[in-house]
Each structure stands twice: as C-alpha cells, then as structure tokens.
Length: 111
Image 1 (cartoon, rainbow, N blue to C red):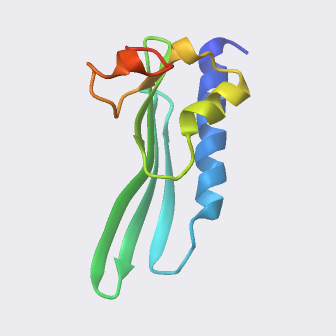
Image 2: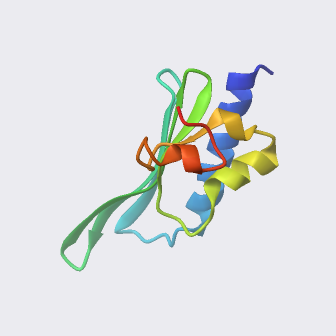
C-alpha cells in the first residue's frame, strides 16, 4: 500500500472510531464524509434538537501535497499524536487550525 493510501486508511479509521463515540439519536445523524477523489474527510453531526438546528463539524482532515492537514479537531483527543502512533511521521502532519506563523513552534510540519 502506498503512502497516500495508508494516510487515507488512517484518517478513515480515526473518523470511524470517533463516530462510534457520538451519541446517536433519531434526530441527529453522525455523518462520515470521505471524499477520496479530492482527499477531504469529515465527521459532522446533522439534525435537530429541541427545535434547534444542529450542524457541527467534529473532525476535518485534508491530504495536500502528500501531507495530512488537520483542519479542525473538535474532540478532546490529540488527533495528531494518534496519527503518529499509527506510523505517520510528524513532518507529514500539518496543524491547519494553527495560524501559519505559529506552526513553526509545534512538533509538526509548517506546510
């Protein structure tokens, strides 16, 4: 399996694991969005709760230029280290939710 296929698999595994932790109701769906053609991956809650619209993104990953970009992490877990544990080198992980000028102070790639 080549590097990009591994990265896609790791991201799908992480999103699927977190989706299992989301409380499931008939009013709110945890949606796993896997766009493997454009390499966009998300976990989103969609529905209604007490007449209030729910639409929130918990996890958002992209793969760009051979690197995993963590665009959003709405969980309590440090998703980047979960990826490292799976075998992704830190230099292939970009914390996209961090401002570009602060990324140099992280243990991960700048871009």
